[in-house]
Amino acid sequence: MLTPKFDNLVKQLRVLPGVGQKSAQRMALHLLTQKRVQGMALAGALDEAMREIIECERCHSFSDEAICPICQDPRREDNLLCVVETAADVMAIEQSGGYRGRYFVLGGHLSPIDGIGVDELNIDQLISRLKAEQIDELILATGTTVEGQTTAQFISQAAANHVVKITRLAQGVPVGGELEYLDSMTLNQAMSNRAKL
Image 1 (cartoon, helix red, strand yellow):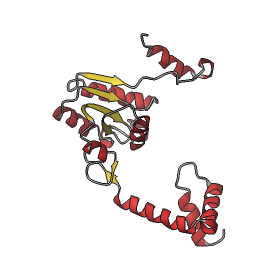
Image 2 (cartoon, rainbow, N blue to C red; image 1 turned 180 degrees about the horizontal axis):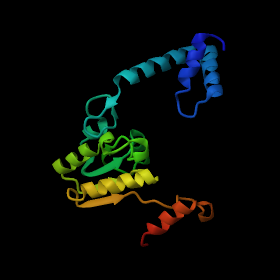
Image 3 (spheres, rainbow, N blue to C red; image 1 turned 90 degrees about the horizontal axis):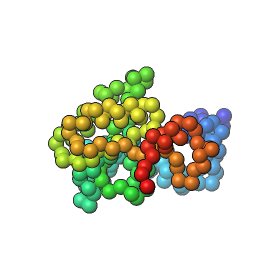
């Protein structure tokens, strides 16, 4: 313990994922001894982000305005809708550069054991959107966990009367992956989802 203010800085840095006590102490010491100007800029950016970044009214991803840039982009395909669990999933798909449709963020996945049911997610808004818009393909890009699979199955059943085509992201062997190093669940998914050449 150096000072109460130092301890508070360390405590606040520990809220970040993967940052333990020692890492937080190193970060705090580094900011205080070598990067005070950058630390002030970081504090300003955090303050601004926490106050001004909101949820997009249309897709529920993060946005600086009521409607996010992806939802406002006229070059996106309106008839393709990709359902993801979190805004982090939107970022991952966008970084791949292979998708030009729209998104819908659920805000998590169904997990009765954690008290997360349909009412805690944006599923009702998703179904309302499917009823109101002409969506040719609904892409379910939820996680490959049991909860992600359950969520995809629930949405597939709820959306069946409103969308012609419902697809799920392919799962299985990663590019460059060696079969001997794959876990049995991944290998099972790869066998189940094999494609014709």
